[in-house]
Length: 203
Length: 203
View: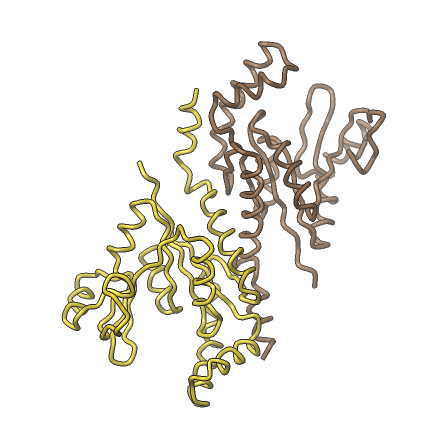
């Protein structure tokens, strides 16, 4: 029997650097499957269905919501985004470890239906540094920056809902910590109940 | 304020290889403090008090038991062996991580008074392999081998009382798993309650 994979949720406030960490982590350790989101927004010219996103019509998406087919979903401006349950579960059942990189509201939704997931909160080293990162993107006006900063500040208090916190000071170190967390979780006794029988079976 | 160190308990059945693993682990990662046991047995010529053991008279040891000064203790043939609480706690308070390498009965005693410890069960890859290792020591007669083997077999069922299980197939891999467990434990949210304030303090 194939052992079920782990669901690893990488989340944290905007500007903490979860995207950068995930990119570096999966480049270095390519055995993980990055979950694919569904969305109602139009595909850009270089995006492919089933690779970058599962592109859905508005009606399809709403019917998926009604059929409880999402681990989490949200409406951002005019478009819906969500994590289809089936894709994640198929990968886990085939023994693959699946990574979800999502915002805090999404992570809290996933936790409700998937308690055995590993919830990792990516924290900025300080609010000063977070501000620099948000400003450094250079894509947003002062109002938007202030809004993002305030929201990131408020989101810090959700840290306690997670299993682990990794401070994103040096990306390479944060990546190694995440990898260590996965290695450790695979050694948890409650994830290795079959070992007892296997070892005895060697007699 | 110095952050308190972690207590890491490495334990498992006789022949699983916990001694070998600890030696390799602490050679490679020398920041850990190996706990020093107290004993009533006589010091050998190359052993020094406070380095290899705390050597105690029978009366001193009994009085330490009565004063509840041990995390765990046991009588083996005519001698007492035990882990003095004070030494471990002093190291932890100074921020050092302390390693206890002890048998299963000892580990279960420690767990009663020290639930925040990290309990790692070292398992043999199979009972066949365990038998080979016990025989391979070449120091024991067939009766003793049979007795050790039976006891190791029975001890496997205590695995479920531990937090983690590491199969000792290849020593180097087992060592990296233990190190990953320690890294992960240091990232646990409940061990990082001060982070929330620290990050906000950066504003």
